[in-house]
Amino acid sequence: MEMTFFKSKNCPQCPRAQANVEEVMTELGLPLPVPIVDISTTEGRIEALNNMVMSTPSLKIGEEIYGKEDLLDKGRLRALFSG
Image (cartoon, rainbow, N blue to C red; front, side, top):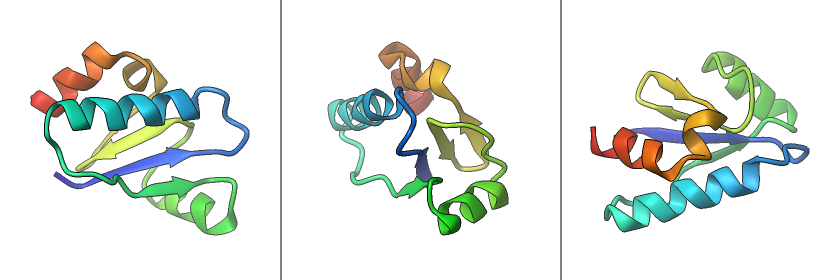
């Protein structure tokens, strides 16, 4: 399962979302770390645009993009990773 986490240094929800992703992945025995792209950088903005990521926090799993509603809810994260 290919994943990338997109964050921004000015995003107040990003630290909690990243912690939730890592915690749920650890619970489920999924491999860490998840590659992280900081869209505060020029390279990160280009990567986000190339992946159609429009906001942070976001998690790309395969070709699907999941936003803060999913990343701030551990139950939704468990369903995403288990499904």
